[in-house]
Image (spheres, rainbow, N blue to C red):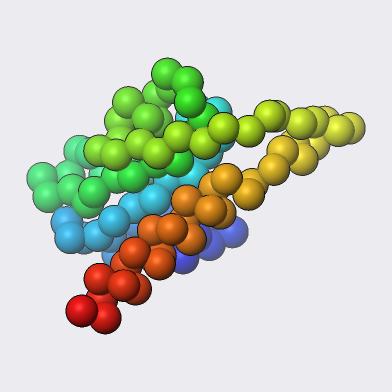
Length: 107
């Protein structure tokens, strides 16, 4: 599943998620309202997907709702009210997961 930019398209895509799906939730602070709403939607289903979150190493709502939480460590950097924090640790985690998937898939 890709993550469409438009909210309405995201709601439609959520219905494509099945019980055997993996849903990755990427958010540093772990308290994004739209992501929390999406997670609650999945949790309320009789057959729910596996929810994997990548958040900061802090007790937050999204990590507590996730089946698996992976922590990232980075400094939050804001400039002119824009978040310019590094995303490298998140990308590294996703690449490691992808490489492991490819390795297992080829067996």
